[in-house]
View (tube, rainbow, N blue to C red):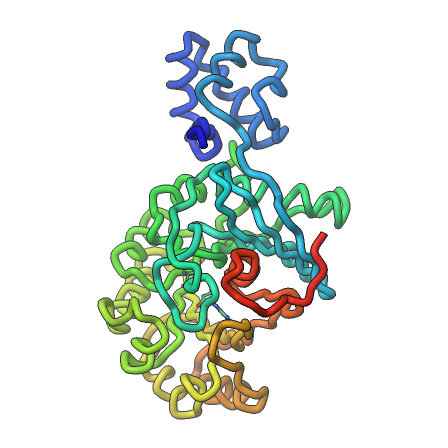
Length: 361
Ligand code: SAH
């Protein structure tokens, strides 16, 4: 397959100015191109009539604006939509659109597959294929917005973007950083930093860099265990890093950005969800400015775990709250369509035998 021409999405206005100059055009053309790409959502350079024909032609020879397409949409009874996006090299990633009251949240992927190997995560079963580039992440947003408009009406605008799909965002820092810049910038999508969340397994050096470079963007850390013995079993990447380094980095993030860090904790029956685990977690988090998000395990066919019963979840929550922690239980959305991270792609890649039992469009 021929290499796709690089996307202009994710390039900074300065880089596009330099490109215009290189192509013999005026610098101000960059403003027209950026505005066409992000505001008018032009799909080809020929859709930008303000540009001279010659510039449109030379841009089209070296670059592109859109490279991805919606390959499949699965709709849940609760309005959640899960979709697969085909990338130019025919790999695909999944994203989830979650309407919730006045909010419309997009959960997007940053890598094809994931190298982290978390035992309870469907994405880990795929293994790591490649990083997404910033243009592909931005196209996930464009495609989701188009889907929202066509299915939920013209006024359906994305309000929140969470980097909680497949992949480890901080292991793809440079492209993540370009995507975040374009998503947040006035010249780009203009989505407020406080409405953007990046979820990480907890790569300490990258977390600290992130807090320095994007202090207003929310960071969520997937801790999932109160001690190294438990975390090593379910998050193999912890064997090298250790919880202490992750929590020290979380503390530094707070000190740098003055924003509370979210601690994510997937509750797995019989693994990390006892009252004792909750007490240990509270003591591990002592002195940190955090919110705890408890996520009842979202069951997936190929994964040998179960969510604890509601009484166990409530008891876990109580133990944390009694020790002064701010706790939320994340409501499971789209569970009838396999809402756990990476499930749709896993099902489509033929690595699981169970039929997801859902209708696809
Ligand atoms: N690599 C990043 C983003 C991945 S997914 C990270 O580790 O945070 C976002 C969240 O979904 C993570 O907390 C991840 O552990 C969690 N997750 C993955 N599979 C899940 C499942 N089956 N049920 C519930 N949460 C899951």
